[in-house]
Image (cartoon, rainbow, N blue to C red; front, side):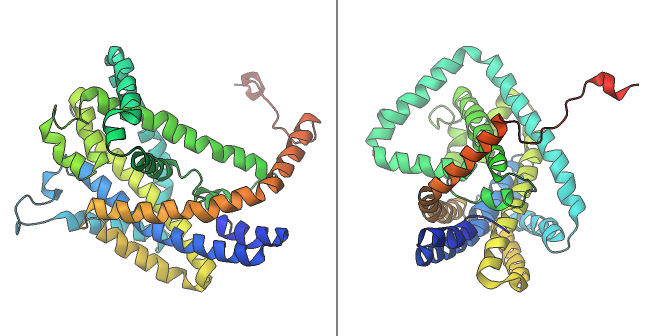
Length: 355
């Protein structure tokens, strides 16, 4: 058990701020539970459904009012599979996802690289377009502050840096030195946002999928903020048939994210109500899994943004107030490392393993 709700409620009292620590800990836990239901659950179902609907059109939202709507089938299937893990304890599914997701991530990055290499001459123009629109043109005309807020929302949603959610998972790691686990955690935002999200953005810009004037058929995806589906069609224009592969990848990404967030939310729920209340949380979580397939993506995204962005407030307050203690731990760690006091894994060559 660990995370922001614990270091806020137990760490701040060491600074004589016990009441503030308790309030911030409870505030964080409540917001994290809300974020787990929306951004970490319903939104994942909605986005993955959008990508799957590109290959299985019968799962798309009906274009005519009163027409048959089969989106609930996807929501029901995701609820059953997720429930088998978080309620049924069938860890084989989660274990399989742990093996498959990195492979799918590798395939995704490789495909993005292929597209970027094919269009390498357009990359400078794409970067220029992104930078120009960030500081001039539509960004400024639409309100620079508003655009910055949206940027913060998307960044926080993407890598959770500053939000405090990932600390719940890292707190469960077995390590003799918490500083070492903190360094591992720092890799996440870099790989997620600096590498993968930048590649995705370049692919969408280079293919013209971002511009409804250039590609009117993508206008509905942009308007509904269905990023996964937009990425799918953008990549499919460059690698025909890749949308089928991406559909599988997106479902696996969504599933693994939902399992992670169910853990985050359950730990916060247990912090608020005790371990005995965990089952009630899991049931509510699965209800939101199903709802994710039938509610508006925009509504889910807005609620998820509110919760996840809100988590950053108590977390960053705690980070600032406790930064002095963290710095002392970091200095001690570096000193031990320099003095050779830390246990280092023995390096071996292939010759050491014989035949």
